[in-house]
Image (cartoon, rainbow, N blue to C red; front, side, top):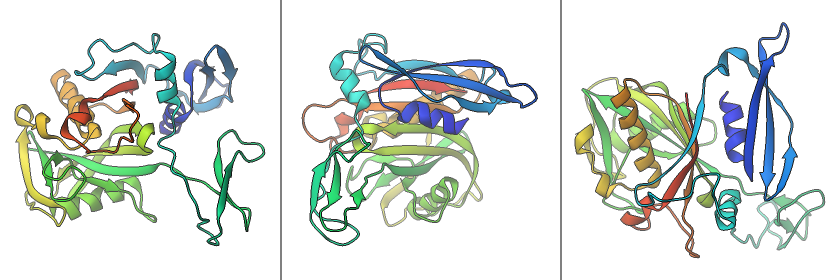
Length: 296
């Protein structure tokens, strides 16, 4: 199911999809996905998923940050909003080939739709892919473990322990490692909680619910302080990133109704003409909309 969610969230344009009856004797259900760009509708390949995973499993909504209470719904988005959703991040010009060091040219390769950096010597295409950020939302005695950052960006602001996943580890292993590095805390991952895509900066966040193996934690090299916060005392006015703001708000909403769910959503940062990088200013974390919000 997660693969289907990733496809729904990562494709450009607006998506519509519908479930069909399970395939005979297969236990699989067919999802038909359509993509709309402007006034054009394109039917894409269908997906087969386990029938047990689709029946009332997800509901979908589009929500906005409190700083934009009157923001447009997904059915009222302007052409500029469409461009923001279709964006795959800030374009960074690559001048040299990562394979041979040759200079590059920038054009659309045959059979593709985007401008790419192409080596003028070896002819290889240099692709840029989103970064995966993994972390843990750790609940202990009805409190949440948070770290105050001792590095840029967002020096002095609060976050959940999280960082870039490394080659050779799973998302869960990366989240456990980041928690140990930033909070000197050993944790056991319980379940995935949220996948949040941020197309404008080319990042995907995967946050796991976790428990402390022992009630011991302390600041790591990248943290100046670690602290357990009551839900009502979480420092929302001094959080480091929009992803942390969204994650904590979703968790608190879930706790109020009884149990944590799994969430998928796209954090669309508002684009003002300047590159937007996480944590460039405390107020900027509120400049977003949460679109394609699905929850199990």
